[in-house]
Length: 105
Image (cartoon, rainbow, N blue to C red; front, side):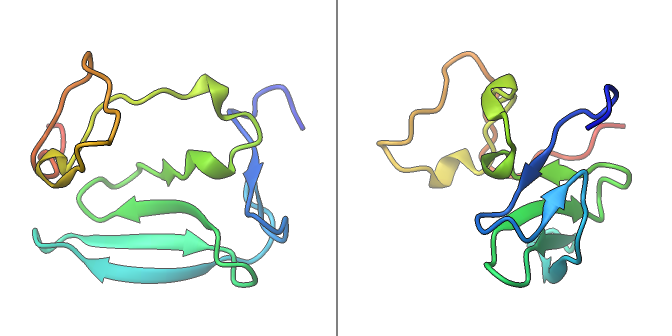
């Protein structure tokens, strides 16, 4: 690992890791907004690794559960809050949105 790597991680079985090495599979889903969510995952074990959204070009969403050291991450916002369960422990000090907020301008 080099010094300038932001984070590394891997799928459950270890077949795919990132700084992404290995071949990933993808699944495209169209959101209610019409934007396309592309999810990338390990073709062997199915672990979700990262995703992209057509409304936010240049932004990659990392599935932090597969990061080698996910202690550095903390929630920055809660989306789809109107659908959350009462037992979901959403921090009180972050922005909450009932739906996906619009992309920043």
